[in-house]
Length: 191
Image 1: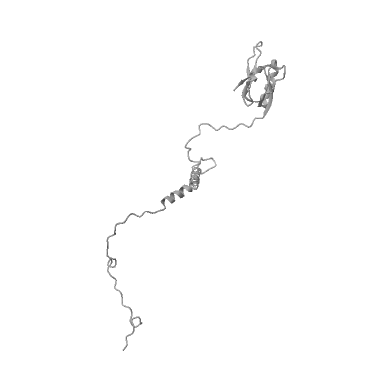
Image 2: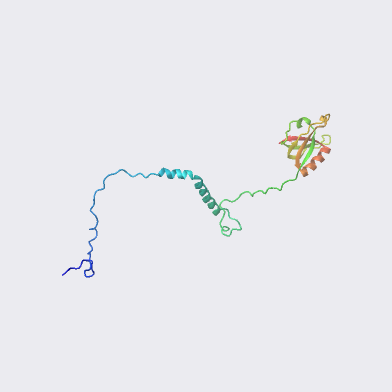
């Protein structure tokens, strides 16, 4: 009689019985001594960081800007921040800029020609009207801190009557200058 091979369905494979835990691990052995492992490429990362520092700086600035916006000043229109007290109160109100003044160019005759020779275009001067000493009039400032824009050449024979100076002044001060030059002698002081 012939015996069927073990893979035939008539003979099922033998059952395996589990072994106790830890008996299937290999035997322990001693690890030999070896030099430490040095990973290359550490300097590569540092070099890459230095090459891309603009990106890192931009990212840092973006994070800082976002934090500043989040912690920014509160306004009356911001309902989330309206109930919190301010950390640093403003002690002085912010000054508003005055609207631009309409400037005009005014030629003015100064009594002392030698004083005019000291001036240069761009200088700032105060224009003073000297009162008549016989009537007891005092000197008064007609225009403060006006800019000298030009110094025309003197015409022959007019040095006794002073020298001409071209000033850039506000329109209202130009009217005062013309009125004062008709009644008083004008002088300038450098600012």
